[in-house]
Amino acid sequence: MKRFASLLLTTTLLSTPAWAFDVEKDELTLGFIKLTDMAPLAIAKEKGFFEDEGLYVTLEAQSNWKVLLDRVISGELDGAHMLAGQPIAATIGYGTQGDVITPFSMDLNGNGITVSNEIWEMMKPYVEMGADGKPVHPISAAALKPVIEKFRAEGKPFNMGMVFPVSTHNYELRYWLAAGGINPGLYSPEDVSGQIGAHALLSVTPPPQMPATLEAGTIYGYSVGEPWNQAAVFKGIGVPVVTDYEIWKNNPEKVFGITAKFNDENPETVKALTRALIRAAEWLDAGGNANRTEAVEILSRPEYVGADAEVIANSMTGTFEYEKGDKRDVPDFNVFFRYNATFPYYSDAVWYLTQMRRWGQIAEAKPDAWYDEAAKKVYRPDIYQEAAQSLIDDGIIPADQFDFDEDGYREPTPAADIIDGVAYDGKAPNAYLDSLTIGLKGAETVEGGEVVSN
Image (cartoon, rainbow, N blue to C red):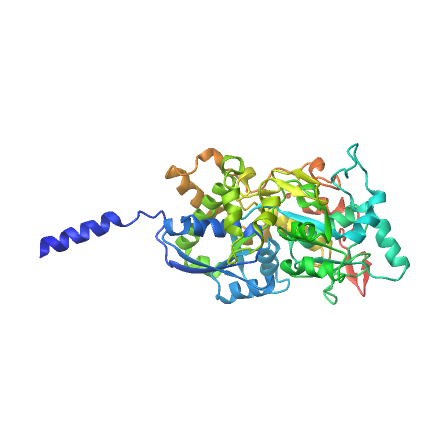
């Protein structure tokens, strides 16, 4: 009997996986919004990467970004696919407050700006056309400016949708509009509409509702992630006029967010989660996007994005369709791993903070050191590096696939890679803000609906 028990114990030990991290909590519930850039979560689950780390994960779609954030902060969700601005805003106390961190950046690019067919026809006379009769991209918001001016002259508001006040989509839409000479409005502590002095009125619309809201005429355009730009093309109700890749080449997008408390209590679990997500991101970009067709099938399932596979594939497999029939090669429209997409750079966090300051969500001027300190409270490259090093040590991903930057900042983005021709250096946030034509600068504040120089 003792010999049998000894054999049983030996067999059990031999069959137990040698996990990289000794997780404190193995059953997890993670949230997401139905967008293609939630892909690392779906792939980590479907390809068994979570289970490889001893994690048993339930993925739950959430109705909107606010509900998702609230449920992470309350502990109902252990973590989630988040707007990059959400952990930052929560930590600095803008909107919903809570100590939220990110050890993993989920992707680069992936968004677009779409206008209705009516607005597109009004824009076209101001859009440069190529020899093939198709628009020359990127299309500047300067082509939209006379349309908005016509609406204003007729006393009609020009309404546009974005997904959340601290979303990349809000900041990218504002960036594109401002680069074309259109004021997208300011926030103040007393007026959080973001419409102070605005020529285009931006308001929140949940991503899956964007096409229907456009079709109903409630909004004339929107900024959203996929597949909801391509959905407008397939429905024949709108035209994507610019992608975020054209606004800022290889810009950071979503992140994976958890509370600082969850990390403090479950540090090994967080590293295991990060390890699984890195593997999923690498799989998504492997072989020059060779796995994207399989990824599209997975994402099209109702429990994930739930859109038609053909619509998801239109951007996910390396193309992007503008007007119906005008499909172009954009291999980097969705990037999940290459270009160090998964590394949580401090400079990415600083960019979001500059946009919060630019539009008045951060009401008062802050020194450069404040931006650095705020970024380091939220973005955690130390966690990422430990997870990545374990993958290197195990021979799963080669070391040359990672950038363990000494200070956690990307190289400055050159002017040629940003639509307004203004370079971005995360180590000089105030100089960057001062170089932008529209928005708050220096010590300016918004008081009583007016910009005041202090």
